[in-house]
Length: 185
Image 1 (tube, rainbow, N blue to C red):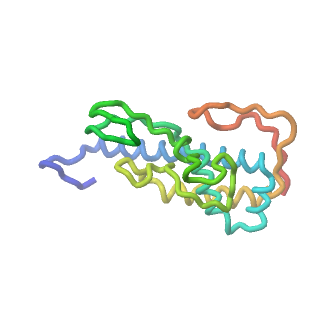
Image 2: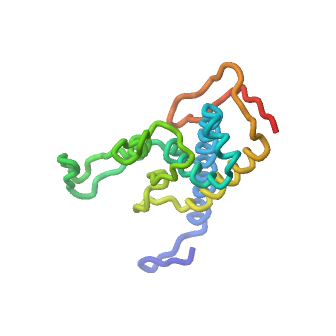
C-alpha cells in the first residue's frame, strides 16, 4: 500500500480493486478444492475412515486434495525468451499452457497418481509452486481447508453417498451438484 516505484504510488481505487481480487480469488478456489476433496472422501470411504480415526492426517489429506483437485486447471503464459525444454524449443512470445492436473498427476513424480491417498502429503503445483505467480493466500487456504475438513468429519464421520449422483465434469465448474448424501453424526 505504501510502496513507491519511480515516484508513483498506488491510487486508492487500485488498492481497493486489488483487495477485492484477493478476497474473491481465495473464496472460489478454496471452495472448489474443499468440494472436490469431500466428493473424493464420499467416493472412497476407506480414506475418509482413515481421517476419522486419525485426524492428524488431515493436513496431509489437504495437500493430497490440492494435488488431485487444484482449484484452477490451467493458466496460459507468454514466453519472455527462447527456452529449450525436454528437447523442444519454446520461442519468445510463444503461448504456453500450464496444466496443473497434468503435472500434479505425473507418474514420474507420484506413485499411483490417479488414486487418492490421504497419507501421501505430496509436493504439488496447486499454488504456483513458488514461482513468480505464487499464490498470496496459500497459508490461509491451507488453514481454511484443514478446518473445514476437520469440522465436517467431526460432525459427520459416517457421511455416505446414497442413490444416483449428478456431477458437473469441467475444470471450471468442478463441483458436485445434487449429491444424494446421507450425513450421520
